[in-house]
Length: 255
Image (cartoon, rainbow, N blue to C red; front, top):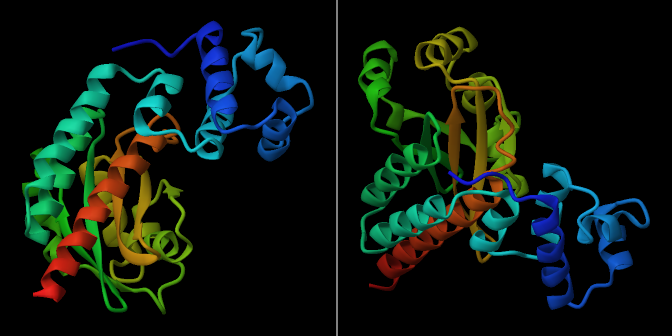
């Protein structure tokens, strides 16, 4: 696994990406809410930007997954692994198969605990699949219902972070499973499930294609971490999977 890129290598990369989109240093500073002159220090290698600043740069300059990973110092093997997973998913045509494949390989590749795949059906957001790993059998034994029975309303359950994710089109971070499962799962049950599995932090990422709400993927870790390093890669991966689901649904409607 590679170390995070040094300031001497990050700066020139940012300069190259900035110039590619035709922004001056001042324009990029203003759009990122940075102090005047700070970008000069970053691009010259005198200052190492924070992870938060890097993520803002990635979003503002619309960098692809590979470029994002280079800035964040993610290993090339992880990038290649994500591409391989996407390639395997592209040949699938069934929503259930796509959902299960999407949450099985990525958590292991990125060192996460697991993930859940949730799709929009009318006003409902339904769980289609959870990562098949050591805790899957445990969950099935202790849960009062099967994970795929989980549903929430997009028009009513506004406090649910998954609903907020798809309605606002922005990723949501949380450290309480109840925030992502309310009101379907009672607080005590959610806490018991979280302790059983060992989830410490979660990130829900929206799948929105052509302004159409497709679904949400929740990624989970067994540590309290903000996902900042993985966000660009997870965004690209989730978008690719969402586009495939969208295409699959359109194909069915056209038949």
